Image (cartoon, rainbow, N blue to C red; front, side):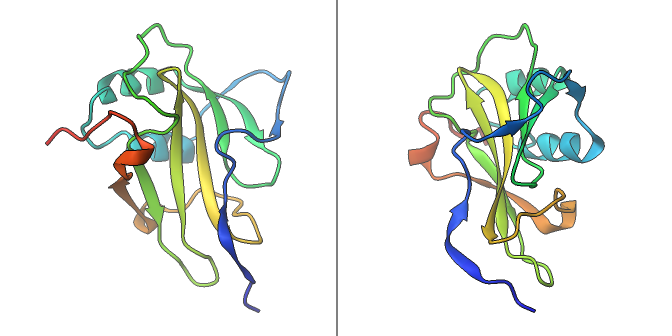
Length: 153
């Protein structure tokens, strides 16, 4: 049975009900680390500092809708990166597969520090897992959403 498709993506702009408040932080699992590394694979201003931050990243919360979105604490001593706006300049496009709709994975950078990795989905049912690497392609976000950060070729 096909799922109904909504017109607007389901994403929270980094503000959502988070599960795990008061629970101890945990290490990123292998899927979370794989996707974070993918999002930080292109070269752009501040990416080296974000990669250093990712080495110390821990999960401090999950979205309550059931999707794999996580809040992250980088516990890093690296300086904040010069990204204006809440989003990294690159995102992962997720291709449709069988009964699953396409989506995106975006990385929030607040105050120059990695703060959340969110799975944006376009169906009424939240995905419960991160997509496989073969379903994702990294693209540069439109400049209006990334502020002054630009890709270095």
